[in-house]
Length: 168
Image (cartoon, rainbow, N blue to C red):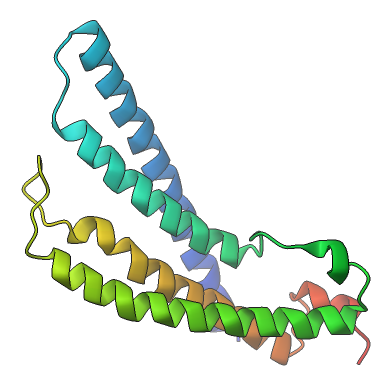
């Protein structure tokens, strides 16, 4: 379990670093585009496409990070009235549904990325797979985070917030 927790911490750190780097790259690219377009009256051709790549990866890696942090959208109007044990059962069901959805995304995302392999980007000498590869990567990360959460729940690990409240 200790190795798994260490790996989880390293993966979380890597996700956070990638998110910061993508955000910084996006800020720089958009700033360059604005400067070249409105100050120099000569828009850059590549910054728009690179910005779209950064934005796509930022969205999907960020979504995986929200899964890791359990910060995804929740409707708590009903679940606040449930007991901690019922909320735990609902959380397990939610994780299993998320895994099923992520498996679907990995399968279809790999297919889509494979099809984009032969389609070049407009201004960059790379295939469009660079954009679409974010989908299966998101799926794999989401599967990992959900399985990790389920392992913590099933082993009644004290790091799982639910088990601190539930007396089963």
